[in-house]
Length: 263
Image (cartoon, rainbow, N blue to C red; front, side, top):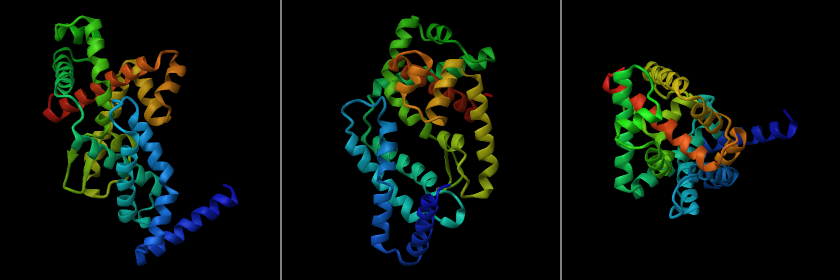
């Protein structure tokens, strides 16, 4: 680690200590400016696949509210890096505003639910993950029509990993992305539930078709863009978006089955 980065960490450590005692607005402003690029980064990741009608600057604005919330609630004593903590708050703030705007057409939302339910029913019946062809037949669609539907709902999956799947109390909501990223629980009483959800998610990831699994790993773990993933897998960006949607839909179906006690 360079002396410059150590100095930066020391500066932040002192500022956090001062801010927690004084709530000095000038210190808060310093943190906002320091982490503004992080807000734009998170907004950029979420903007992928959204309709053009969703303005990027609006996403950044929503994210700033999340950053301010993170600054107010961050506890340096928890030994969690602020960047890690802030990303979750920024993403959550943007997601909340997108949901409030309700920009997803009802027909698209309905199609997404139909596919998810089909996967749940087929998995319960067959004891394994169904193929695209089997899902299409279950829905009385050709494979081409099924892929067209997947393409239409691809813009909605940006929200999927942030869906809440377990709530212990008002302060302990667990989302798929929280489980994957394994953020420390604020409530030790719910650590068992978190670990179980994480286990189910990782198991579901392993059951995904190979390309879908790779897309999720490269996107959420390796932090690549869909365009970069396309180059790695030698497919178009549109195809990557489609694979991402299928993977998320399968994951959601698996968690729905768990919630219903089917598996």
